[in-house]
Length: 574
Ligand code: GUN
Ligand code: ZN
Image (cartoon, rainbow, N blue to C red; front, side, top):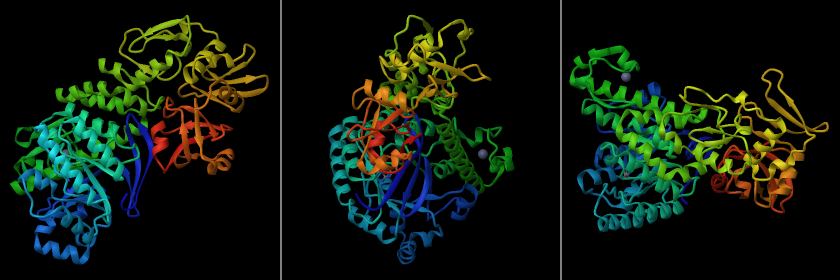
């Protein structure tokens, strides 16, 4: 792998993540949008990008700079940061976009790589070939082979390589490209997708993104090349895209197109402006009366405001655990997005392996597509571990044991059904309830660990179960937010004895044993093995390589992530 890159997950929802990305000692938060700055004819100045939009990373085009003698000489002499007057992260593209648009470029892969090194790009790219959708497969294969060959000339580049994964709409080619690029590069970019975005082929885009993501290690930040339309952010972020660049805000403005989260409008057709960004607030419908040049500038600024606004909305949704709701809501704005939502069904096994198993936000039923959400996939697997004679019909989950109605997702499930389930109507004994939750969370048989004479204490305020005692020893608590069980050492050791290695376990390297034993969190780099049926936010048992009990904690990554990442926390130990 080339120059240093650090990436860690701070927060997860669906396959999306809020991450901390460090490149060249500069740290940014993902999902990140890099506006594209065109040094020939910028519509928004760098200072404005920084001040008005808080831009900490931008993208510019090394090929454009190379071809303009005056800019080239200045950039070579001063370096790209000084030339731009920008201290943040500077990513450069290689001319691949020009290659796609004009069919050829007058530089070579080696030369453009060298040039990006010479001007001091933080993130650069090789001259990948952006093969368009539906290209005849032999040609797509040939172009991919050339892209992969060119990638090898960039492995030792003096910048972090934004390594383009191509393959058109041929998913087997995407798979091959992802495997190879994912192995050799720390930052992976999905290329050749702008046309899919422009043509609203969002379902095909889902297949391309999912195929790439499934075939690269989970610790690679993923850039969606040119995917700058806000209407696709919730879906793309939910599939695990971490970086976006937008030339679209400026290109659409030049074409008098006004972006919204719901799609694109032509400015001339707008009698009202459905936005209250500083531009729209200032001008209102008078925006249409400005000179052409002023219109373009202001449209570009509006487009960028909407773009950042939607990205912030996505980030807040990840934080809250409501990204599914946002994706479902946005899917209603256009049939093509609705079709993309339907396509997620084909990838639900993969998605449900990465999606946290319990969340802070309630599960809102938004329509038939809720059937295929990962909360349902994961719940159905776990319901099958519970034996109960007392079941309730609760769509989209089917029959749910009455004992577990209080836990996530059933307890926080909100649907438009006229008669909400009368939970109080299902009288279940508290011990039976805890036994069933144990089976649901930890596996068939786990309920036997709860003995008839265990004592249960409830919250005075809510009257819900909060603590479980064996004689006077607290052996578990029940989390108020999702009613799931948090085992203490006694119960965890019993679970460990009942379920054989590696079930319920996160296994850490010897170096981490003293720290974890003291109660310090488990860093992902120390995880050497893990039960692959666990999910993020599960309660887990941390053990040594000899399977000695160390601690109980909450897994905050998915099993694959815990193994792939070498930065950040994997288990928050209690
Ligand atoms: N910009 C938009 N799409 C692409 C792509 O596929 N590759 C590169 N390098 N830049 C792009
Ligand atoms: Zn606006």
